[in-house]
Amino acid sequence: MTFGYYSILMPVIAQKLPYNVYSIQDIGKTRLATKNFVPGTRVYGEKLVSKNGIEYRLWSPHRSKLAAMIEKGMNIPIAQDSSVLYLGAASGTTASHVSDMVTTGRVFAVEFAPRVMRDLINVCIPRRNLIPILADAAKPVSYKAITGMVDVIYQDVAQPGQAGIAIANARESLKPGGHLIMVIKARSVDSTVNPKQVFNQELEKLYTEFNVLDTKELEPFHKDHLALVAIIKPQKKQVYEDKN
Image (tube, rainbow, N blue to C red; front, side):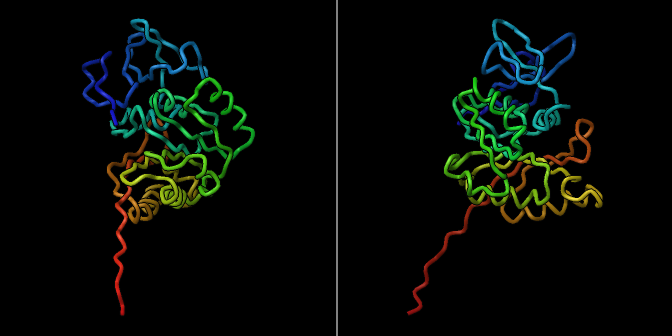
């Protein structure tokens, strides 16, 4: 896989950005953006900026947890040819930026709410690499036949049992050596418990299946959210024992 490179528009930025993600100057400010996979098309009213004949979509960390992760300096293991299982795609705001990134890959966008799914479908129509799936992220068997095995799981769901959902999807669909990019929403797991306690509880569950590479709280962009990047642990080989 070919991963991203340093921003060519803002060479002073030392962080290695994912493929097709840039730091650009707009009205005197440095802003995150993705190269538009469907030039001339907006998804959620975002500003389009053209530089040197290339169109970019501004990407606000206040609107997207993935953008906030990049702003916080996290290394995002999404490549140009990655297959991504996106859990909790909602109306497609962040999913559309992931579509910009994986120009030769695929994004399988899972969403449970039928009303929101209508908006997501409209986003997917001009984006041939973005596939909408109406399903419950807690039941990965129901869509495994569509997604097959993927390189990356990106999870941003607002429901309890978030670690369990990630583990279940990884067991069904994550390739060996695959990555999990996840946002733990403390208030969705348990609003009565201190968020840091929730983060630790969910991380302990994830440690059974993943090696966690990085974690960061997403304030000031998103309160009571912990972002993490992890890699699935190698499966232990079963050794046959002849008991005769």
